[in-house]
Length: 66
Image (cartoon, one colour):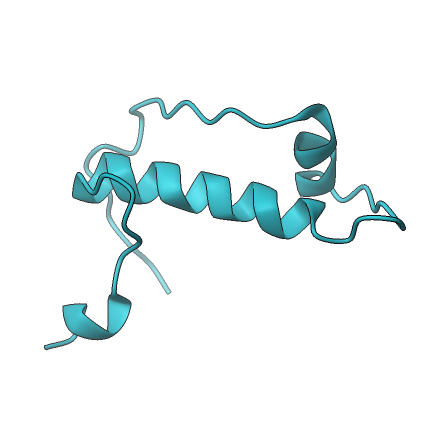
């Protein structure tokens, strides 16, 4: 799959805890396996907000196809 993103060099700021950032790099926390999921969700929300100018709502991808 290939996509062209015109704003590809634009910077996005996401605030993560140290553990969340570590989880995104592949580090695993036995006690809290949700660190990775929480971090990914924060990144996704930041991208949604920046690319689609959504405030706190996530993208309804099923509606984009219609």
